[in-house]
Image 1 (cartoon, one colour):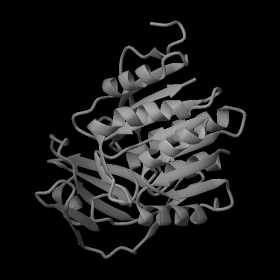
Image 2 (tube, helix red, strand yellow):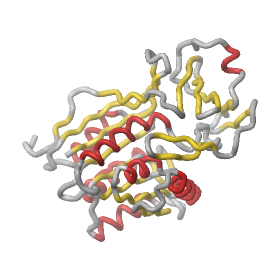
Image 3 (cartoon, one colour):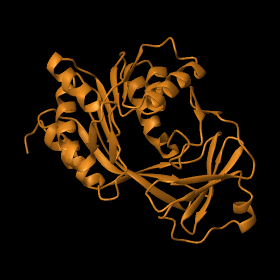
Image 4 (cartoon, helix red, strand yellow):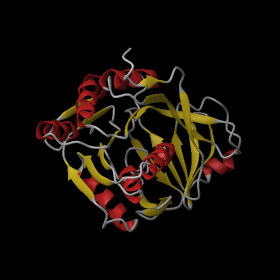
Length: 300
């Protein structure tokens, strides 16, 4: 190992998200989780919840919205005991965003990412200069807005026109629509390839790819096939005084150790540290948690 290579943590960590004013994991078990999003109680499938629920069945059956899964992954339909508003404004820190009941079992944001938002907020605020941040596969923009609220100039990239539109709405809802955020609807890989050719650089990069996806021109993204090239390209976009690169993945066959190894290879010679592990959601009682994704993050 070169003395200037990043120091990789020798053991995984757990970035645990606890509930906050607008979100709470109330209970879990029997392959499901009971959550509170603002005023609504929601039941969603979660196969990892192998234990028994603590709350009685009335708490579960009386939920405002229940997602019934289909055989196809992430597919299914919502059942409503109380019809919710089309959008429900929620908040985290200085950022506001709309929760929506999407056809893909989630509510247009991923609450376990709050642990990453806190890390990003501290990283941007603590750097002492206005960072230039790139958020790839940025979805509805919560991470982009966390960085913008902390003082960064952000480029937000997502292949979905609808998601970018929702992200813009979230910026307006947060009172951050006057901040230096570029909203770009494009295939993330194509955008990064073009930025490399242009010689563009960023001080921080957020890379949160799906397992599978399609770009606006029909481009296909497959995590295991395409992530190595994307990590290499992103490493080439980091400025000489870059602050961070954070990589998150939800695929069941991935691991934090694998993500750390990928970053370590591509950031050789840059120094800094790489920590890695798992993102989890903790129940209100605090003694049970659900591991939901894996991360590796480089900090200068």
